Image 1 (cartoon, protein in one colour):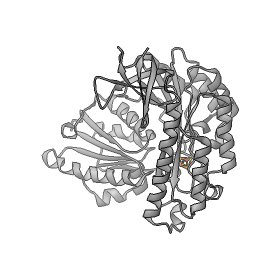
Image 2 (cartoon, helix red, strand yellow):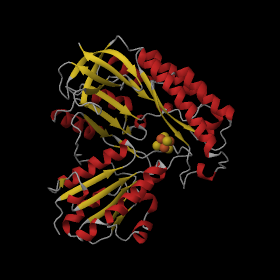
Image 3 (cartoon, rainbow, N blue to C red):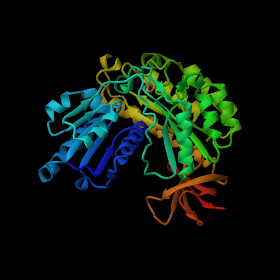
Length: 432
Ligand code: SF4
């Protein structure tokens, strides 16, 4: 059986997107080429995520749609990868016999077996304490920003989160292999690298901690921008902030997941910080970095969240004035501690709280963005604008989207842009 063309669909978080690039890297190593439509492919892989409920449902239903393609091409291989595969283990193969491959996030090294006439189904969902995919070069389609996975798994065990169960315990790549990958990305023409981990600032390899890694990466010649996502508030330390202050090429943006404002709810979430500690971290960040953007994640309607707890979330938002936020209604993930907690709140109440945080965040985003009107920002041009291909889209160091209406520029350029307007989550400006 010749497997020459692959098609990957990815659901969920940036970690999953980075994993798809690893998987693509493995397949490309066997001269298998990426195609843009599933109809052309010899192998279709759906890389899934269980962090949000919808992503899981979408992934399974998508694979069921691909089942029809097997009628035309009986040799077509269908694979389910990632967290959903991990969580549902062999059950998927027994219930959906048209799926040939089920591999969990630590089992992708089995994939090349398809080129050696392996037997189907190919199933492995064991979690590893060591797998970090050292030595595999990701195949990236985006040519501006290289996402570099520096660690896998998580040891924090937030009570609502499935990640420690589907992606396993925390482990980090060697500093050398990360630096080698950064150097290669820069040689390949990337302008920006983003260090990626479920808990990026828990990085720990021998005696190296996250600030050591940040120091080494930002010191690589010709790296113009370094980002990282997502840090845990508990692990933000002074050395990291000092480096961000002193190194021009480390972007002035910190994603600082809040999740909830009430200390009581934070305790029930096992977030290992309370409201006071969170606010003092935010204050410290502003103390070190004057023009920093702080973004966040917020969950509303966690089991037991009373109106007064929810008001604490709004209070923290008012104090920090986040630049932007990802906001969600709580939904239980089976297998987590929170899924066993009494969830008495109606969907209407959760929806109402979500509307209120979204409204507040809209105001705050506008306050933060309006403060930049009239200023000149350095913008990395990433793409054409989706609304109007005559315009370009780029990002500031603070990770804000800027639409550029006037001025000559190419994708990949770093340009100075005068900000003229703030609208929604975007800024608008012209090159100066
Ligand atoms: S820190 Fe908490 S929310 Fe983030 S991946 Fe780990 S367990 Fe999940």
